[in-house]
Length: 115
Length: 114
Image (cartoon, rainbow over all chains, first blue to last red; front, side):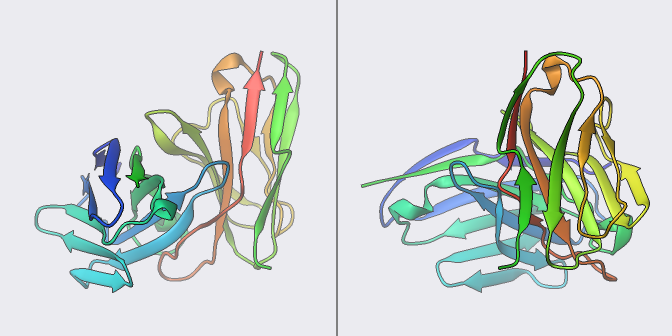
């Protein structure tokens, strides 16, 4: 089955700096890659996703890049703010409906934005 | 408000005492799933359901049961809980289609089995 590895496990940046979280996946058939943000005491919330027919997607201060050849994808957060502090999870899926909807998650990155 | 509602939020129980964690969604989603979250292991799928009366095992189904009698509800049942099932549990739902869409997660249930 799919295996997703995520690095780093913890990341501390100063407010205003950029943060990058990287994930690799094992199944070359995977073609849907969402990112989730989990704040303390809450469930994960989808913040951005990308499908394999595009290499990059941006939404304001966050962006995701995908390299299908190397089987890795990354989350980029620019101009970090204290409210960006949370645990971030990457995930991968075959991208189809039904059983192909299953998301396999990375182990998470705890991002801390310091003042 | 579109949401997935889990109950209870916190639960402490004793080994062997059957319990049920409820999950309900109001988005008319076909696909529902249970995950457990453990430190250093991320989120692992326990069971999923593609529609009413259609359920299947995920990666860590041992010790759990589920049912899907109605589209909106997907309870997680622990017939005889053990301490290794102490974890943070999340229910999630997604619309069924010819491709995957992002899940909507509940707020979680923190279960402690003593």
